Length: 317
Image: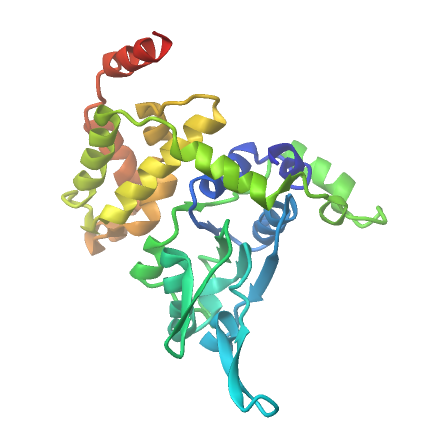
């Protein structure tokens, strides 16, 4: 899956790896960056690499909540209401420019992202498995946009920024995306995994061992965000859960059956930063939430690796 997506997204292996980490950790991904750097391309490539149901939602100001969740329509022949599923009833849902829809429409995703279900007219409908929302947004454009509320951002396991490609990667991009080829790399991408295989991978990730010391490290790191002087809103307990789940997936992708403090450290910024709100003074001084997380990583004591070594020895015995 990683090789398939990297065949479309040039020069961004760490971004692709994080996207796969979120997928295996049963989370949702927010891709936030300036226009034209491949946000939607990454979401499409990830969706095409898996043989599963995919729906794309182009968020616009006139989009309604029922367009996402579905609506009950009266059937004249049956003399009864029939539920018509919305775009969220897919295994991978691509929300393009999610901050262009009104807060009322954005809130239609809250239940589905957290509980994997949709409730319409008093009836609850389960969503398929695996289920992942990949949303994109532009952080610099203000006209016609609505900032994501804290509750919405908190449901995204991680936020990633594509960043500008290197000159070498941009040259390779011109070779394959300049229109001279009859078929674009995205259209040429074929599924390399089935949905039921992804479900098995997710189940395998759940069995990755996380020592008590690593759990405590994650808890201490998240708790420290609630007392940092540059932050007026720290991370929630859901952030702790997402951080541990992501660490499990990262360990599995590295071929390990146990998570390390290094996994927590590597994922702290993408998992925590988008949930934090800097104080007005920090914003005026140019200090960001990402810098606050990096500061906490330097301050928070790292657990003794001897506990992990003992667990590995016990596994060998």
